Image 1: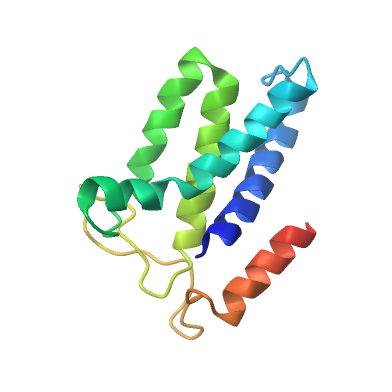
Image 2 (image 1 turned 180 degrees about the vertical axis):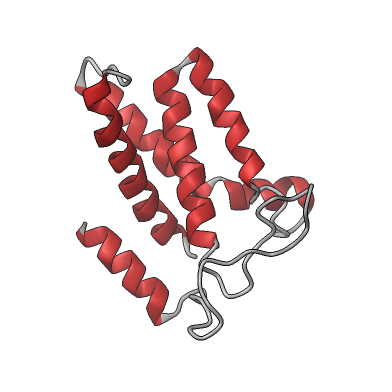
Length: 143
């Protein structure tokens, strides 16, 4: 998926998580700037996995696209719940969207190298820059 699709989907997942947890008093936002900080962190964390892979691993081989990357924001939540939740939301949205790619990716890497996908063999997944990605972006944007 492209950056803009990851950003919009990250915002939706971040806002949904925010709305669900708000009534339980798990999220304490006292003023508007804390909410803006939450939104900015969701945006950054929803697109950061790909550049990190190119920087550390010299290519996009999906080493960081593992479910285990979610351990990092869970540890951050211990110290600052709002920041950890924002990073968790961004990472989770990135993982979910990339599961829609035709090639899938190793969700449980490095423990298991099998590739996983969120679609059946009939529809073939959503290719980068395809009408399917445009539809996801448009629906997410309208949401």
